Length: 261
Ligand code: SF4
Ligand code: SF4
Image 1 (cartoon, rainbow, N blue to C red):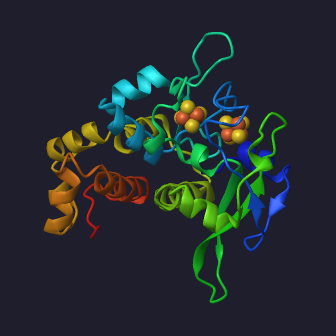
Image 2 (image 1 turned 135 degrees about the vertical axis):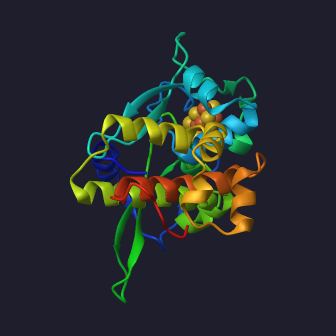
């Protein structure tokens, strides 16, 4: 996930090369336990919302209303839900409790990456093919005692430990779509931005849209993918299809969409 503001913030931090290591550990015994889970500016990606909403057993619409403030990326017009801190002393995250993060298994990608920041952009590999280029930055906050302990790990090892790769894969797909829109020089108009909220952040409603609009009659989708997308227990498949569908809707000039997805 990227935006001008977050890119500028990341680039103000010390960079860690892919083969460099850092020591860090966080556990309930650190004296600063829970101090980082408050007063945050925390944008949520579609995959973050998928995981949180599913763990909480809420609809996408209810989750967005109860826990987020909706903004949009200024350069592309894509929706950007921000996790709303509680309005009480210290501005805590709504998911922090005395024993730590109450949604730990499904905490957002940014919480998993911490204390690393990941800057991702679309570039070219050695063979000239489009690829995701990654940079890593170390967030060293004064109150955080996690750097006093832990074993040395590279960014890749840290991400593997925190099971962040599945988040990065989905977020990078979203970033590719936004990069295409940015390159077109035409941010989403209001109608498409509303469609993006529904398709990407309210997968339950996206399934209804698929049925009501007979989307599977308008694009070529193989039967296995159709079944996975409509399976309420397979939100990952629905989000993956939603990203393809949004790309088709944004860039198709034709009234009758026809493409193999
Ligand atoms: S989601 Fe969990 S880890 Fe992230 S800020 Fe909130 S309480 Fe902390
Ligand atoms: S060690 Fe850092 S990440 Fe862990 S609780 Fe303390 S401030 Fe938060």
